[in-house]
Length: 304
Image (cartoon, rainbow, N blue to C red; front, side, top):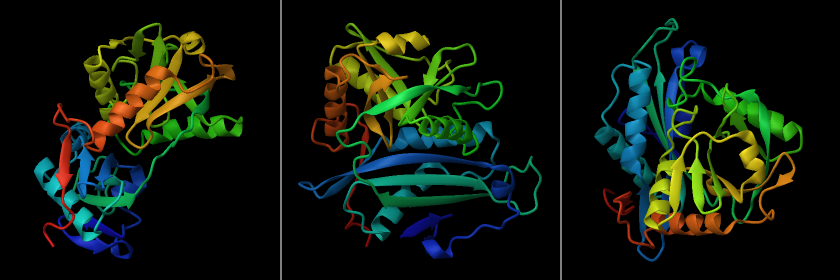
């Protein structure tokens, strides 16, 4: 396995960090996770919504005042370099990590930054499976404390606490509420519910990460003439919803079968969930017309 590190391809065992770097001392890092889907008939890898992911990375670095960030074009080129260096010809999860790498710096260090890009083969995260989840006792971080729209490493401790608690109590996963008791998101997932013919998801002011997959599902649903509403969702709406599902880059579209041991609908994979999951994957694999311009195609043979 190889990494792209500040414009150089290196072997994984050659990557190291000083134990007193700001990244390790204070968690000063942001990241993005992307999916690449291999189309065997075309012999091409299609990266899903590359530009939107890199823009969110730049936004996260800007809010945290990182200095010396490479441009999105440089990062995109680095991503293609590492995919070709590893000769990737399968579904893959791509991770771009940016760290403040000052050694001995204090908590206010803003640079220099080190960028790592890796690509790891990854199949379907939740193939054919749904989740049984609980409402966490932990509340979601807020924009006035640890801004959720930043995809920072430190923010994920909030999700980690919720997930560990859920697993300890026998659930697969969790959903977090905002400080005022509205549904926010799951650990690494945005949330959708169906009530009647409406597809509903928390608005961006409900402590969510502004998910790229969330945005994709909204656009796809509207293209299928599904009525989509972005608003606050009460906890009890999860119990009476016809369908509930998580969405995220790694988890794609994951059905929720029960919440706090109350079945969602009939406790099975919902019809709208299945429809949106199928269309999402068809677009991501370039098996359906990419009318949104979401795919960046990589030929693994080029550039060798």
